[in-house]
Image 1 (cartoon, rainbow, N blue to C red):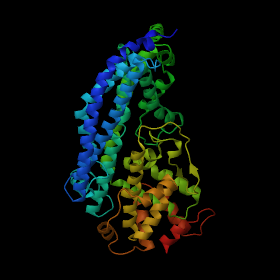
Image 2 (tube, helix red, strand yellow):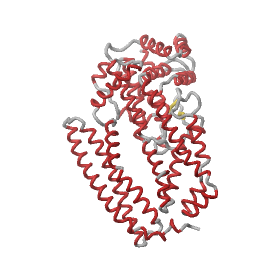
Image 3 (tube, rainbow, N blue to C red):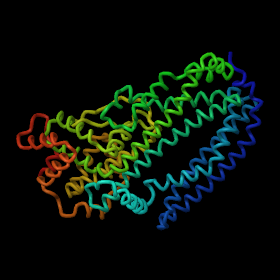
Image 4 (cartoon, rainbow, N blue to C red):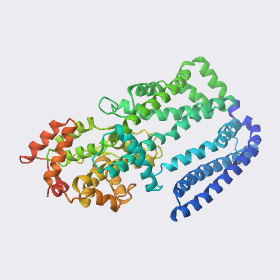
Length: 505
């Protein structure tokens, strides 16, 4: 039998939600209007060259967006409350209206100071703000960290800015899943509070959302993508916790919350409390382990960021060689074993995920040396947004690879052509096209002049750099194979292709 608390008999509670939500709508409308006007004025200031106007404009836009979302939510609750009061929408539980008003909207309003602070911090990291300001800040941080960090291959100033962009990317990647984390806190903690006022649907939704966020870790474990050598920012301990969450999920309890209401859900709980208690215990353990894994990965990534430049050139050495396609794939796997966290993060991990705000159609797939698609057939969305995934792809293709190739060849057109080909291999043609047409880190004339100083290198010089960097990484066997193949005719399937031919001209 359906629980009365979760059904229209509680509609007498609906009128109690109307006035509070009218007030919250007014607050959100005021904040949205103020932030929009501030953003408009700041954009004008940014055009006029006012310092930090871009940061203020970006933060104002984020605040306005959040406020408009809150306004629409409040209006929806007012409309629902009125309709429920008039008996025109009896399917909406009055307890749900109470919980969403008291807990959700109330906490949203109380959290405005924190939201403003987060928007300001986020805007200061945005790639749409002043590149000069970010470049200066990044250079200062890079110089501090360089005490314990081996340099990259670029000239000092260019190296500092390029590394700063990679480190900035790490910060964005770490903070981007905050939306998923807040959703879990809202669902798992707020859901219990909502249950206390008779709303079972909030907790049911929260439990399912938490499981969905865990599933993308579970999927990688099931598909064998977290084994030795992958170096992904997910530990065996995190994968084990994810497996236990998914396989031990309290489905009967959640279904009771969704379909039968509070009383029946409590009956299911008291008949078998262990699965529900365990999922909450796992929620705490999973969240702690996730933060621990991310912190460790980020720590190493910050210090090995300059090495991403060298790794990109070692990958190129393989692709520009006369090895067969199969030999190239095997050699790339050996290079990956030596890859720094920056390459793992911005080539093999985030860029290939399904965005949280997208579908499988938005997933990028890498290619083999023979241009065959490598699709791991993942179907579970990640916790990263589409913008974050695009940024990760650009960090690899622009901050790590293009600048390194420009330094290597000292030929802008050749570097761009090869980088476009490599981006296509790593992420597919659509990503390569987007980055070529809309770069996040566009080259400026001063960079090009610095990185091409001295004129184009000879093919022998390029080969010598390839050989030196491969051996530096402990990849002498790969270097020897490339050198041996260069001294004799190519085997079938090992054609260098038009770009390689140009590189050797």
